[in-house]
Image (tube, helix red, strand yellow):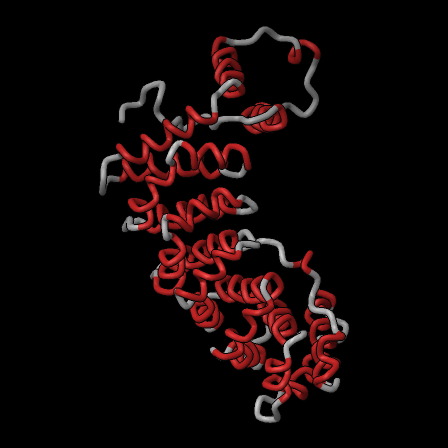
Length: 341
């Protein structure tokens, strides 16, 4: 596409409200700020260059979101394939679409104008940035949006997300795929059904064993979130070895921030579930001694206070009779917010 009025601008981004306009103005003029401007500097006449810039900024306030999204969709569809300029054009368009999708009403408009038609082309692209940006866009669309979730499930996109999370050679694509999955399955019964049908829980457990730290964190979060939203899935997680996988991660010689999320996931899985409690209590796994050592190790380390609290709760739970498993609370749902990784 030519650099005409309907192209995706590379220098000016649409501003959706007054707050955004003020931030945009401050960022654009930051380099010109003086420590102590005089009255003459404050009230000096606008130059033609500044007039033009201000007119463009104000024009962004009157932009029609649907029109802008349609322009972005066209830019993605008509971009030259396998060229640097074509890829840059698609990335600019996707970046703008990602921002529009954060608005729940505008996300609905995106679905209505058949914006999902660009998805197959982007998810199959050889350019990893196009794949992960597309996944982030889809996650933004699906988050807390039943209409968008239904549209994605109808297009059978969940299996594609799982495949990318499990096999994509780029770790960032895998992370964004798990992000899209977490937004799609949140509080959605049909998504949970499809997740089981396509062995999605197996993908989560495999991701826990990945070398990429952020992928482990996202997978641990998903295990916690899915257990809280649908406790019936704990049976499936225990059956595929989730307890053993989580415990093995806690036994790693190198301790780090990942362990907090792993400990939280293990506590959530064991709470209110006898089979998970029995596995975790088995002498072969040695979880009780591990927890005692971990609690002692984390004593006085403020940055790991939450992990220590999880370990104490889990140890208390494992020291209780199995008949009292349900009397202990799992980590607060408030802590299970979507991680933007």
